[in-house]
Length: 194
Image (tube, rainbow, N blue to C red; front, side):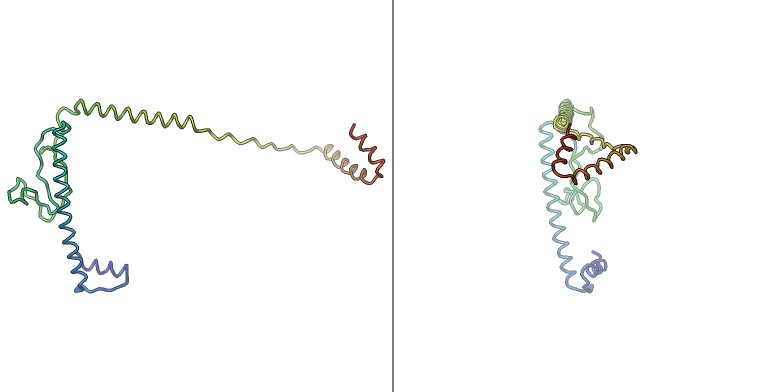
């Protein structure tokens, strides 16, 4: 525990200055001790469970019978050393390691490759993954409708001079018809309908 680092961390986060002799460091040390003991206990429980699981797997035929590497506790001592019996390889003091499943002592892969049971499991997993992919692609093809392309935008060509003149004459004629008396207006509109 680096007290100077903790002091500067507390000051950076809270703005409170604490001294190295502050009683809060005793609380931090107590917290570390309790945490270390709890971690060691949990590591021992996990190792016991993994050994039990490995025994069940060997009994079921999933793992070959192989020598078991000594279990390592969080404090860096093997279970044999913790019990008072010497181990073949001395552990490094103060180092921690994660619990591991039992492996062959040589570290070599199992002889013979995969067992027939494992090949069947691999084949079944491959078949399930291919069927899943086909199901996803089929569902996507069935339910996915592509967005139709946008309708083309038609742009009018520019009008010719004759067309522009006809439009202007038509507008003048409409204004002139509105100024006629009602009887004549009706006659003109009837002639335009023909």
